[in-house]
Length: 159
Image 1 (cartoon, rainbow, N blue to C red):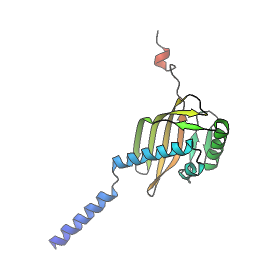
Image 2 (spheres, helix red, strand yellow):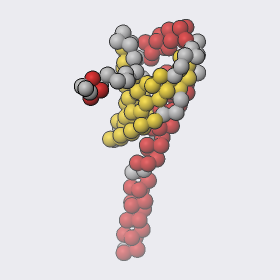
Image 3 (spheres, rainbow, N blue to C red):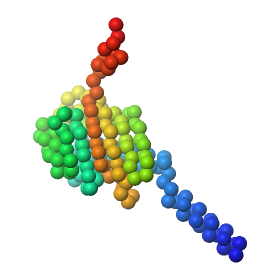
Image 4 (cartoon, rainbow, N blue to C red):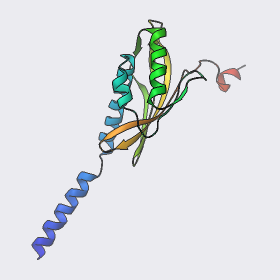
């Protein structure tokens, strides 16, 4: 009986260890997911971008005050407009990457150089919120901003 209990306990512990997600692996998966999103967007690969969205609910805030949308159709329309205007887009390497996870939700915040239509790159800051569905992370919220330089309160208050 003791041997059975020992084997049962070992199997139960192994099952728990497999079901508990590895935080480092989860962060790496989310970083890769964010990079895949940037790559697909820059390539105007709408099928891939739309396939990464949470089909239950998705909201985005673009860098312009008028760029607020809900769902894949509105994001597709924005991408259509972006690429009619720019024709090309390019993202550089992500920096200042901050990833948080809590159960079925996670966020990735970072900044990245972005160039549209061959213009000089500018810094874009993104916050992406992901919802876990099975073994995939689906994008449920996206916010991006183009930060200014020299207009923080600290800079403006300098004598």
